Amino acid sequence: MSEGFAHLALITETYPPEVNGVAHTLQHMVENLRERGYRVTVLRPQQAGERAGSDLLRALSLPFYPQVRVGYCRPGYIAQRLRVLRPDLVHIATEGPLGLAGLWAARHLKIPVVSSFHTNFDGYARYYRLQFLQGLVLRYLRSFHNATRKTLVPSRGTFVHLRAQGFLNLAMWRRGVDTVLFNPRWRSTELRAQLGLDGDDALLIYVGRLAHEKNIPVLMNAYEHLRETWRGPGRLHLALIGDGPLAASLTRLRLAGFSLEGIQKGENLARWYASADLFCFPSCSETFGNVVLEAMASALPVLAYDTSGVNEHFRSPDEGVLLPLESDFAGAISNLLMDRVRLREMGQRARQRAEGQTWTHIFDALLGEYRNSLEKIS
Image 1 (tube, rainbow, N blue to C red):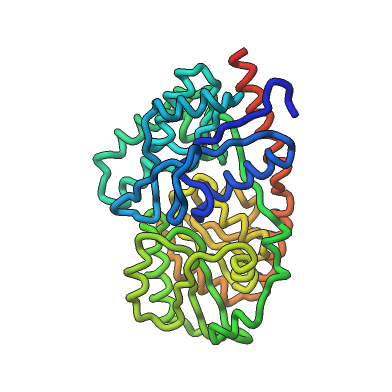
Image 2 (cartoon, helix red, strand yellow):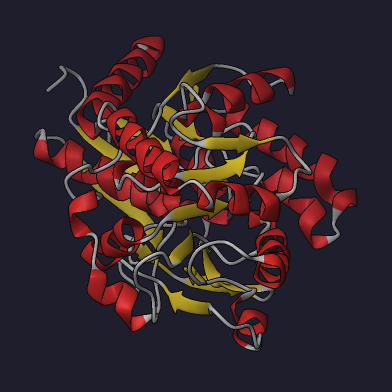
C-alpha cells in the first residue's frame, strides 16, 4: 500500500447492479483495490429495489432513457459525507449531477480529485437529433475534467481526440478482461440447439446497449439484407444481448432467425460469446469497447468499424476485421461466413491477443496515476 494513500472515495452515477461497460470496469477497480488492502467508499445512486442510505443516494430515471438513473443531492450533503469519510483521494467517474456535486465538494474541502472519461456524450447528440447541443456538451465536459488534477482515458484515440479539444492533464487507463471467465471452453451445443442451430449454421451475436448510438439500425438492416441474399452453407441466426431504449421496437420485429436475449451476466454471457460464430459490433461511438475484448477472449471473431476505441484492440487483420466507415456490413458478414477455417483461426489469434490484457497490470498502472496525482498536491 502506498504511503499517504489508503482511502479512495469513488463517485459515480453508474455501478452494478447496472450492466454496462463503465459499471463493469468500476466494479473490477473497486474489487482489485480492496483486495490490495485499500479502503474504497462508493457514493452512487440507488438502483431499483435498493433503499437510499448514506452512500446510496436518491436517483431519477431519465425520461427518454429509463434504464439510466442519475443521482441528485445537494453539494452540501456530499461535502458532509466527504468530511466524515476523510478520503485521501476522490475519483469521479461520471459527469452528471452527482459527479458535479462531488467535484464541488472535494474542491471545497481541498481533497485531491481525479476523473475518468468513459463516454463520448457530445458525440451522442447526433444520434438523438440534438446536434445543436453538441458544442455545449463538449464545453461542459472540458470544463468539468479540467477542474480535476488528472483525467484518465481508456484509449489512445480518446486521448488524442480530447487533447485536440483542449482537455488537460490526460493519462491512460486501459481496460482488462477476465480470460478465465471469457473463454472458448464455454461453447455450448445445447445453447445452439435451443436456437435450432447445428452443423454449418451460423450464430451471429451483438452484446451491448440497444440504443441508436450503438448503430443498432445498421446491424438490423444488414441482417435483413443478408437473410434475403444468403446462399452460403447452413442457416443464420442473430441474437442481440442487452437492453436499452430500442428494445421495445426490436421486440415487435417479425424477422426469422432473430432473437432478443436480454441482459446476460457471468457464465451465461460467457456461454453466448463462446457459442457464437461471429461478433457483430457496428458501434462508432466507443471510447474503448469492453465487449470487443470479451469476445476476443472467447475466441470469437470480431467484425467492427475501424474507429477509435475499437481498432486499438487489434494488432493485425488476422485478429479481427475492421471495416472503413460506411462499408457494406452485410457483405462483410457474408464474406466471413463463407470461410469458416479463416474464422476459426481469427478467433484463436484474438484469444492470444486478449490473454495479454490482464486486469492486474491495468490496476498497477492506475495506482501509479493515483500516486502521481497525490504528489501534485503535496
